Image (cartoon, rainbow, N blue to C red; front, side, top):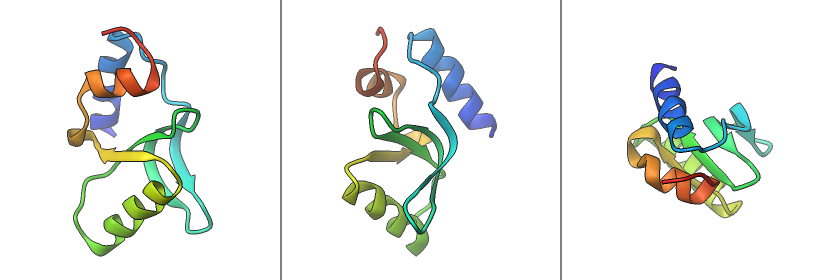
Length: 86
C-alpha cells in the first residue's frame, strides 16, 4: 500500500484526481486493481509476471482498460490519461 500512497501523492501534485476506487474488481473473476479510475478506464495493479497477472491484464485490456503496475506508469502518463496538469 505504500507504493499506492506515494503515487497518489505525486498525482495530487500534478492536479490529478484521487483514484475513484481503491481495491477495484473487474468482472465476474473480480480481477483486482490497487487503484482505478473507471471513468477513464485506467488502473494501477500489483506487479507480477505470473499466469494470474497475465490473465488479469488481458481481462482489463479486453474490457478497454489501460492497466500497468505502479512502476510501469509515469506520473505524466497517468496525468495525461486521467486528467490533470503537467
